[in-house]
Image (tube, rainbow, N blue to C red; front, side, top):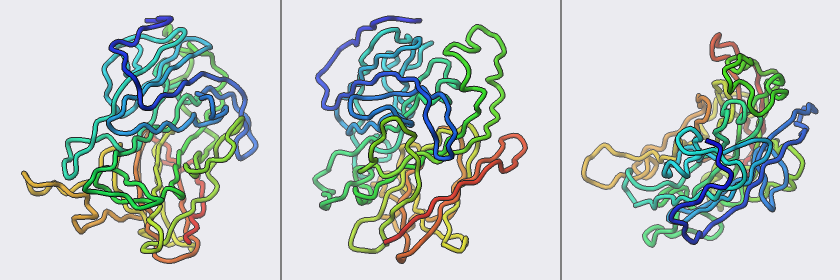
Length: 351
């Protein structure tokens, strides 16, 4: 399965292209602990966790040229559906020994049509010895942006979440990535367990819990550090600016619960869910007619609580009604016993 330089069949000229490399080094987390991390880096990203955020557009040809090291690797585009050669699942195509250019095209959205469109939040990760390599840090956010449709123009400083979706403020767009570390796993080698030996990859027992991410428009200097979420800036709704979009990507192997509260800890329904796993929520109750987004149909999906598992993604519009401090509390739950193993809280500052 290990191929040094696979050929990209039917190679086309890309509109968006990135060159990714593998890196391995000890990175320090926000609690002072250091762990060996494997991840991806681009020419401009620096060596960080998560890997660089990739943002192709619907309808564009996208290229990602990957040169791994420390053994064979792949890139799987989780939630997208390229052909098998470009899907990055080694046992259905190949693993990369030296270099390969992945090529795919995100489907264009059609207003009111739930069956078309790829705009939303996804992620990419290695699919060689998957559970170990993803825990080691070989993942990053993949955000597919919509192409502007003439019937749905976009305000200055804003972007739509999908082709006919709500507008959001580019300057405050944020990503949140729950993650946890089992330090024992970070002492294993590339091929641990692949020959059938029991190295304990069926036992994930994390003792360290983190919230990765931050402002997507201005992530700051991410070289040689873990990108940690310390605060969320949100626009008051309604207000002079468009609402803030929070993209949530679960890179954790445990179930998570997420609570939106006011400053006193009371539930606050300030989270409008607009998409899940890259698919918008639409009103499809009447067959044969256009299916508008739920908010446009008159019933925004507002909540103060999200519950989700590994690899799930949510796109959430934040709708604080007044300026001030709110809070987002994330809990990690033992998937067998249901015990709450850890809690982390970040402030949401509404202005």
